[in-house]
Length: 154
Image (cartoon, rainbow, N blue to C red):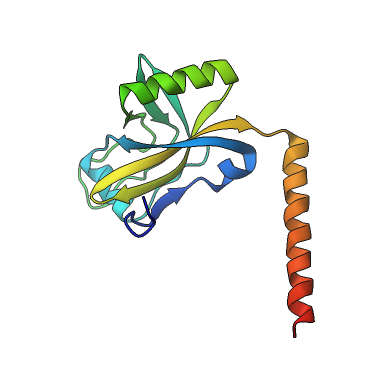
């Protein structure tokens, strides 16, 4: 799916790309109440410290924060577990890969595709502290080189 067909991201989990090595990504639908959808359409949500868990053959999103919708009278619980919609064969594949390779399932992005809310899940492996330091060092070196090249071309 191209970025033009998908709406803008409602929430991204930028810390996930830093703390985890992304192995594979999946798209899942999400079961929401009306006030949650309205709050997401306002662009308010937070995915930091959230994760996906598989329980009884179903996938649930835990720790995601969707704030209450102020005009609504009966609001939702902001951090309730939300069911994710995936095909059974995708869930079975996830279970196998998570058990065999010691991977975890984290949400990286929350967005609308047409009228439906979607979550991008990543099968990820935790990074070691030295890997994080190496990534920061490489990024700083690339930034310095870019700055030098830009400065020389003036």
